[in-house]
Length: 125
Length: 194
Image (cartoon, rainbow over all chains, first blue to last red):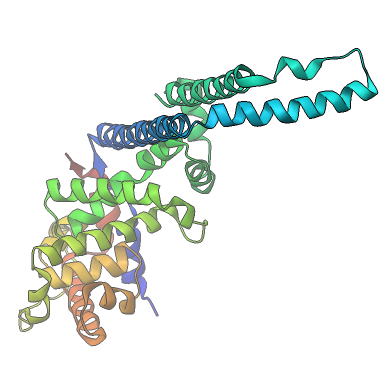
């Protein structure tokens, strides 16, 4: 069991000494935290961008868009026939059918993703 | 940081600030650093670290604390939690410098002066700690400054429990002799470190 002197010793240890540079010390740690956070954001952003570039290049190399175009043309035609049976006057599906429909949709999505990453990055800085 | 935000943080309890920090709020953690850095730096100096080494270790301790702040759940004080991190980091540093190996072999037959009740003999804790051997200083400051039990200190120092207990006992006897009653708080408050 702690005696009076031990309690006093704990109290003395608990009292923080005065440091004239305490504020500078705290700011130094805050700066190191900020720097670490910014570096992390840059690394994540760069990794995301590189992943995106690699992904897009892989898609291009595997003729993905052409195949998607062909596939979507087929399915769009089938859908159009289906829709035409219900509403013969509407030709909505022709708006997104074909190569350019798919490519522009993918482009807009990619653009949204990049803007999101960029805005997060600017926010962190 | 804006003044208003500063005021908001200064009104919060340590546990609330730690919760903000756990959510990634670095300004909230900055407030915790402001509150407790002096205590951590003071403890490390009392453990025997040079001012530069104490600041290095304290900085590393706060950065480590930020990384694992989700582990702090408000059981015990935040200051005590960071002090334990800092004390362990300092011991690791001593281990790297191979200074811990000598602790078990420190001389034990040193003369301990009797307690001095005379006011003229009063000195503060920092001065009194300088009169302790390295092992005594480490053991006393880990148990009474960082709040570790004798067993935890023995584990951290990689020393037998009995050795730690005897270092603490001898250290306490020396401090008791050097710290006259009533001298501590006043002398402590006057002390300025830079």
